[in-house]
Length: 190
Image: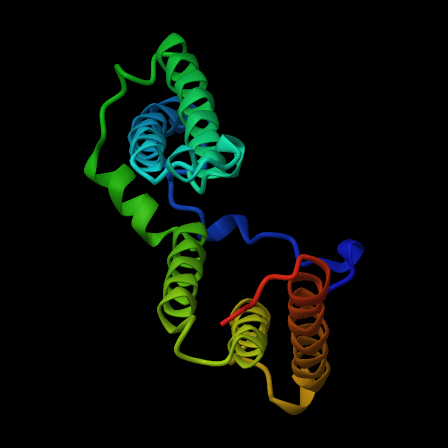
């Protein structure tokens, strides 16, 4: 919750030597990421094609529930294919994965942040439908902001503004999302 000009500079000393964020490792990372994302995109596309169509009900076929997921799956597959072939052109398929590189990936701060993000999003999706939407979304946003902004090294008093801004952001965002979906799009939320 810093203004853009006041963001702290990344601590370069925490980057492991030969770690994942070095330019020479990007073709290898793009190669494997391209494979995983292509498989995911193809899976989404296949699952969307298995969804019911509206043709059986004599309705507009463009109202089928699989249209948007199918388009997203096709786009993910296409773009990850581009990433995959660019990585091959840059020699990503010939680079070796070493123990040092794997250690660098798992000890890097960006991996830690990604794991935290995935865990909180999975928890949110599991609770959705069991907890009131506004309350769950408010808590999700509040906790998400605090996880990435709050520092246990500093006192709570010094970070009161961060906590208040997280609360204000959570209240406004959850209310706005609910209002837009319920009143504008006429979607009943759980």
